[in-house]
Length: 126
Image 1 (cartoon, rainbow, N blue to C red):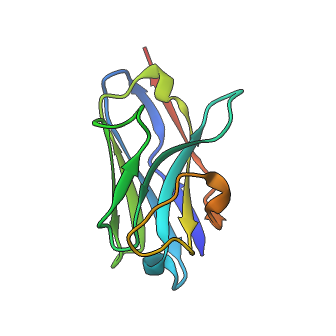
Image 2 (cartoon, one colour; image 1 turned 45 degrees about the vertical axis):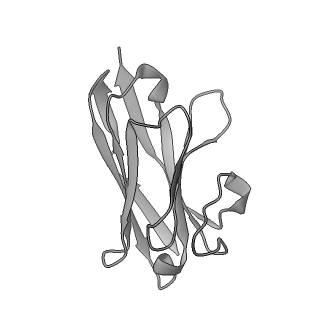
């Protein structure tokens, strides 16, 4: 699976962005998908994940109620809608695929993910 993230940019605090991650290959629909982020000088952290057919989602506490993850298996794409953005959301955002998650579950640890996109930069100004 090859992953291509897009949609990052510069936005003012309180604004919104929608990230997309397009996947190539046949394993997208059988993979749980996740978004992680890494701010300068910090470790990569979990943001959100969605199960294979989208029935289960999980979010980091810091983004609950503001971010929404979704997927379109027909388009091999996963999305991250980010609303009410804060300066502390500034980071490079990565999408990732987890081939071995069970159908109704997602995982929140980066090392459990098998494939990674190149990242897209989100900058939130105050």
